[in-house]
Amino acid sequence: MSFTEEFDGAIGIDLGTTYSCAAVFVRGQVEVIPNDMGNRTTPSCVAFYNDDVLVGDAAKTLLGRGVSGVVFDAKRMIGHRFSDKSIQEDRARWPFPISEGVKDSIRINVTHKGEELQLAPEQISAKVLVYLKECAERYLGKQVKKAVVTVPAYFNDAQRERTKAAATIAGLEPRNVVVFDFGGGTFDVSVIVIDSGSFAVQATAGDTHLGGQDIDSNLLKYVLDDLQSRYNLSIAEQPRLLAKARTACERVKRVLSQSTAEELALDGVLPSGEEYTLSVSRAKLEELNASVFAQCMKVVKRALQDAAMKVEDVHEVVLVGGSSRIPKLHDMLRAFFNKERLCNSVHPDEAVAIGAAVQASILANSAEQQSEKTANVVLMDVVPLSIGVEIDDGKFDVIVPRNTTIPYKATKEYSTVEDYQQDVDVCVYEGERPLTKHNHKLGEFTLEGITRAKKGKPTITVTFSIDANGLLTITGTEELANKRHTLVVQNADRLSEAQVKEMIDMSKKFAKSDAVDDAREAARRTVQGALEALSAAIAAMTQPPPSQLQKRLDAFTSHTRDWLERQLPSYSTVTEVEEKAKKIAKLARKAMKKVAKKARGGEPASKRHRDEGNGGNESSSDSDVENEADK
Image 1 (tube, rainbow, N blue to C red):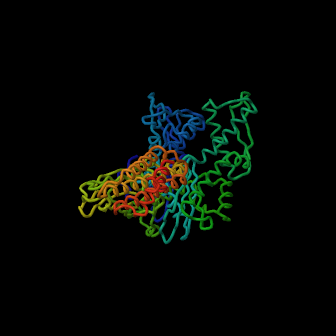
Image 2 (image 1 turned 60 degrees about the horizontal axis):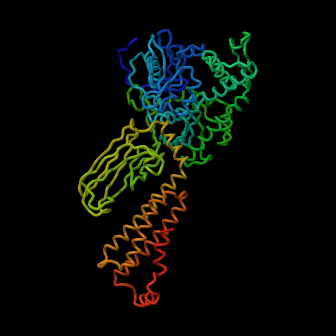
């Protein structure tokens, strides 16, 4: 069915790992859009079956029957490489084959109309999106062309927008809110400050490979082990039976959110033809998934830490996502936040789509979607990674710290590092590690034709501006020469949510070694600066230093350069590096004083007589310069 009239507004779509949902904000309220089966949520499944492509409930039914050609978990693959450990672990349980594509990408192998196809995960997700779009068009009776889609790998800021909007629907008063979004395959925690219609995200944390399907997998492993133990039967290599077992595990998990025990039943599994049954208690499910729940709480703690908040600062905890119904998580969250009850006033499966619909209505700005309820709502995002420029041979200088609320603008001044420099390279990075080689490069530009002057004299002003949509603009200016250059970084150039999480995890993993690297670079700059100052002082002398002093200065310089090249890289602690660098800098200052004395006309007569009385032997301070540098 085609529609000639176009819907002037926009719909909201939650493209989830296991289930998806569409909603629209019309007539002053959010309406969840049912699919063609009348259901308010749609399984994120696509089946290639009998020359047809089926999406949603029909595909899910085929999956439960163990039919081949049914693809799910596409969102779990997006933003990952084929070689990723998490993908290889998931691959073992997926009933559909995947293979390695170009540049370590993931390709899903399906057969359709007799042709072997290799599809990207995005292509599977696109089929679900098209289906939801068609459902929305039937519901509205109009053609739909605009939507807010909450897919973190497609839109870097989508995860934060959906949780902010979900909090909007919860009707919360001005307060600090933690949004706990535990879905089928991804987990997100956002800390939000709500004040007079302003929603400011203070911090976000999450795990793109943690969700309800991990709970299903742990229960499935328990079932497979039981079959092996009681009946010496393995169905791990039988896709049809494995799919039936997984579907049964998902059903049991859902029931155990309401009751304390449930029986799992599978027919056609045992060789005797009898029905296989296994009683599963809620306590057993909690035991099997203790590590999953612990990881959830670890992410919650990290989000609070990033937001610089204490547990007692949080006024409300909002539950979002189907897997947030699990009673054990409720107990852990209540205990951690010391709350008698949690906020679950929004349907967990529909909250994200509802939030997306609110966001869509604000962005669309169409007359049909205007309402007093959203007229004064302001959504403020944060930057997921620190942004800055490269300085001093690879050091990362942060200008916009991670979790800074946007829109945001910051300016910093730099200068030249060489005499009469004619241009300056501005290299922009995002990341959390002190050296740019470990971070992600966003772009670079060259500011040419700057004022020719001694190093350190020209002033290069770098301005970072991020608008409400996350668009980053970097401008470099040098006013004396009236030079200006601008770089615009599109969202497509930014890292995906999975890559952001990976970079944050890496920064924590290598925090100690990064600190040592940073100290080494600082020591290198300090010592090289001292050597340059000493060299300049010698060059400024009206007459060359006496041969004995020149010999000692040459030895000191040689030993110091050797230390920089050979010994400095071997230091393993910050304390070692800093202490040695201070000693060498102190020795360089001693040498500078001796050079200065010679430049002023030599040492006092009494000192010369003492040296002559010693037979011309070098003083202890002179030998210190050479010997200490050689240690």
